[in-house]
Length: 68
Image (tube, rainbow, N blue to C red; front, side, top):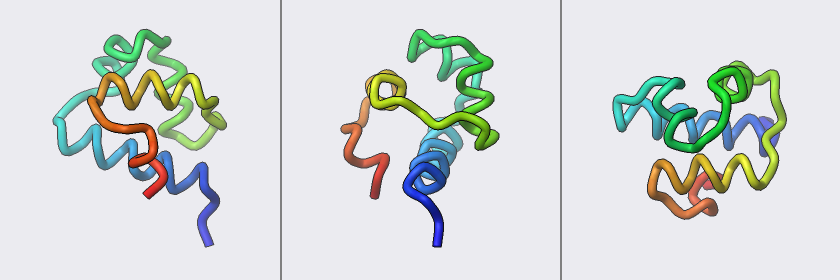
């Protein structure tokens, strides 16, 4: 069974792919370092609620949808 973090990261990856964005574009839009997004997508970073809020805001979604 996947952890909550793994599910959230998978959902973020899917949303980025659907929107045809790069990690750099997401980082810029979310106002975080590109390395932060890269580490998150590689599974090397446990995201904070604040980071998830920034990503959700950039992707124009409700943060709750990252957990579905």
